[in-house]
Image 1 (cartoon, rainbow, N blue to C red):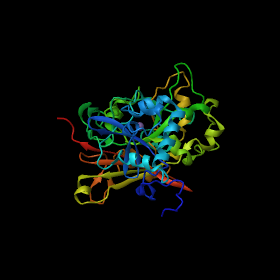
Image 2: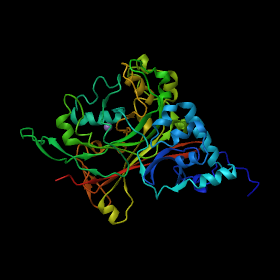
Image 3: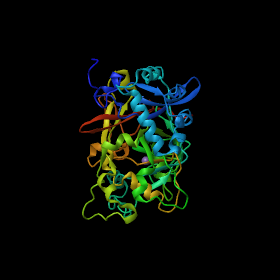
Image 4: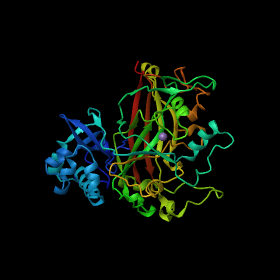
Amino acid sequence: MANRTAHPHESWLPEANTATTDFPLTHLPYGAFEHEGQQHLCVAIGSHLLDLHACAASGLLPPTLVEACQAPTLNALMSLGHRSWTLLRETLTTLLHAKADPAKRQAAEAALHSIAGATLAKPIHVPNYTDFYASIHHATRVGQLFRPDQPLLPNYRHIPIGYHGRASSIIPSGTPITRPSGQSRPTDLTAKPNFHPTNALDYELELALYVGQPSLLGSPIPIGAAAHHLFGISLLNDWSARDIQSWEYQPLGPFLAKNFATTVSPWVTPMAALEPFHAPAFHRDSTDPKPLPYLHSISDQKHGSLDVKLEVFLSTKATSANKLQPYLLSNSNAQDLYWTPAQLIAHHTSNGCNLQVGDLLATGTISGPAESSAGCLLELTRNGTQPILLPTGESRTFLEDGDEIILRGSCEAPNHPRIGLGECRATILPAHT
Ligand code: MN
């Protein structure tokens, strides 16, 4: 094999070269893991993680990146800006490439750990969290449940709708979710509200967009520069208690129905790895309004959307006991979003609101046009009126204690290795008594 020419994307780690891996050499998503009482940054490659703290200590990284790569979160690296992001990515690609320098390869091998044996942590400190409502299919189907005569509100096609979420309860994949309690009103509208564990616990399939470059208070980010502020993406589950939500949301929007927990997946896919997977912005009907100038750019319309295939799986106590695979609840694609990430950023800052390094902008529930592509149970079961039958014989309207929700995402394009976003998962625990 000595004279064989290495494929341009080939790693010396054979498992990174398979067609099914989430983490080929072209991906290198960032994460963090627990190491001897500290949190170390890492990248995923095949079924392993490469410890960046250890790489920095072994002299494998450029001196200008050592301090940021030995920090517990990615915020310091993000603050260094694009040239540093590119330099680190190029250094790691060379280090893990099939034609790597043998001495450096040996040093890198000493910094590898199996992902399966690692405790992954939240890699980014998130100062602010905003959740949008960017799927027109989600907005329409939810609207049909509550306002059959006017499912989509008149503002929807003009303005990206969002609300400010809670950063303190953003938690990493694998952390169990305690069923929240709250105030709700029974469907019998003459009954009095009461306080109890939610009977309508739901998930929302979303993408997290992480801000890597800040903006100044008072300085809107023009749409042409918006994508430049993004560092990367991950999967996000915006847990929602629908009974609490329906009673509290008017007039100021979601509050305790959503801020009890938001789960993010451990791997942050850098925007550089997503370049082959861009797609045209949502195709608007000829009757739809054109985006206002501050939300319109030709290049954003051409390739500002992301082609990310998304899936939601449910595992119950019975599916695990019977060793059944998790049940596929739905699948959709981030291309189905009505607004692009750049439009969300341009809109968010259009009034002068500033973005900070590490800020998380979530897309909102990503539902496609088909009924089977609905990104939450509220849509799939029509607010609990049409239960889903599972292969175990069980049925679900909303989530039960012991249920586990698993989100997955992947990107495919001709002549590029497939990449996967990994998993975002969590199990429901009974409410506090
Ligand atoms: Mn949401």
